[in-house]
Amino acid sequence: MEQRIPEKLLCSLFGEAAPGLPLFCLERWQSLHETEARIQLSESGVHPLTLEELEEYGLRLEELARLELGYGWTKGSPTLRERIAQLYSGAVDPEGVVVANGSAEANLVAAISLVSPGDTVLVDMPNYMQLPGILKWLRARIIPLWRRPPTWRFPLEEAVEYIRKYRPRAVFVTDPNNPTGSYMSRGELEELAEEAGKTGTLLVFDEVYWGSELGEPRPSILEVAGPEQAVSVSGLSKVYGLPGLRIGWVAGSRSVAERVWSVKDYTSIAPSRLSDYIASIVLDPGNVDRLRSRAKSIVTQNLDFFKEMLSGNEDLLKPYWPKAGAYVFAEVPWVKDTLQLAYRLYEEYGILANPGECFELPGYLRIGVGQQPGDFRHNLTELLAALGRLRGG
Image 1 (cartoon, helix red, strand yellow):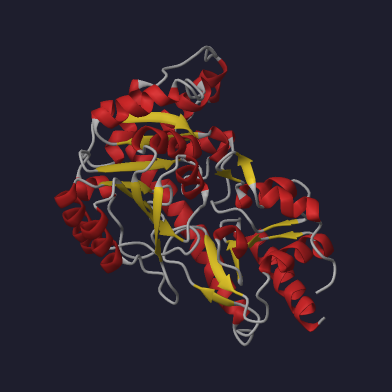
Image 2 (cartoon, helix red, strand yellow):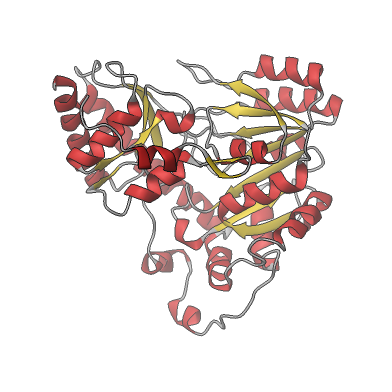
């Protein structure tokens, strides 16, 4: 392939952001390119809602206009924390919930409050690489648990073996998994929880895609293991189509919540009062089911079109069809350097997709399937045409 990646770009994707803290390849790749891309296929959530559309979910814009924009509750308002606790079917109480500015901040404050230098932790891989990066920065001893194709199933047997052998401080899991779209069954969650309970190992789950399952619903780890043994991180950005609110949370025991809250004093202090108010309305129990159904409808339509378009073109892309999430992790069988491929897609065609190198898995692209179906049809058609030309060239 021609048009080599500039050294400046490589330096912005790989290396250190601060001593011991790896550069966050995925987020930097997107941040550098998403505002200029002609075709956006890098997003991992469903198409965002507008304030006007939220009126269908109970938001009153005239009440929003009268809201005083002062500091809110640093843990999140009592109403919002109660609504979040309800998501877990009584497994956690509102005092065990801390609201953060997106699930990204929730992951950060959870890791800082739970892990000390030298702690052994097991980490789900491949993964959204925020937590692996933070854990390296915290100088934890990281043991990866690799999901493997074709099923990308969580390696439960390996996890059990390592829990018995190393008695880790925590197991960090992203489930439903990003980027593979696989997720654990209730039985698997129960087996993991039983084994972790014997060693006092904490189960820390990033569950930001919880509720997007296309098959059998998956319970939260909190509903299976309980708040004394498990922590759930989630938010409104992906399944609920509200990334601009920047509302995430950490849910677990009251003691974990107190530690997380104390760390959060050093970061953002409080969530936006405006976002807190809107989220409290959006997370009314009736709305949760509607928004999850909306997400699954968008993804299902787009996956059906994706499968139709690839019929007879299987040598161009080899997708691993997701069971959850709003993305497809696809092997590119004719090239290994998918960072170079993604760079050429952007530079020559204005198409933005995420290279597998940002997940430590070269040879793959992560392609978002959460756009409005009409837009997705056009964008996927453009992507496949561009890949065909690049392969032929």
